[in-house]
Length: 136
View 1 (tube, helix red, strand yellow):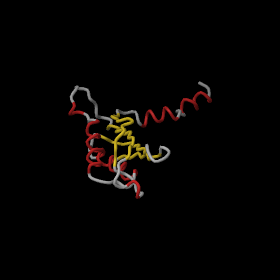
View 2: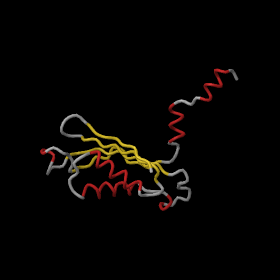
View 3: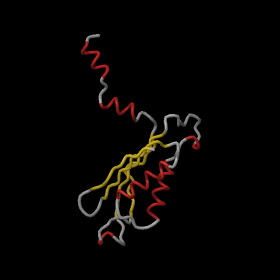
View 4: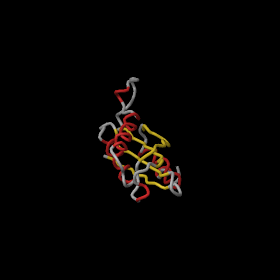
């Protein structure tokens, strides 16, 4: 192998590095649109608006569904329940707070090592939002 080939082999591409870093199982919700009491402005109080959620929960490396048993892995239903609990508790001012609460609830499950939460407001102007990534 030449010096150039050796250097190339030693330097993985960003995609390869991401695959290695996040090369674990993930449960997710994608593009879930819900009505939510959210917003800091006066015109956003007392009304609902549509938000789109995408949530990725990266599992700990040893967590596998090898026995076809729901109890061995976290469920996306747990994420849905967490979102429903948070939104039913009342008005939320900031998307950032909402995202943090979702990530915090997910990370309470020791089988989940990292959470990526993306929330987008779909009404009242251009689509805008927040995305966070949290690990334990």
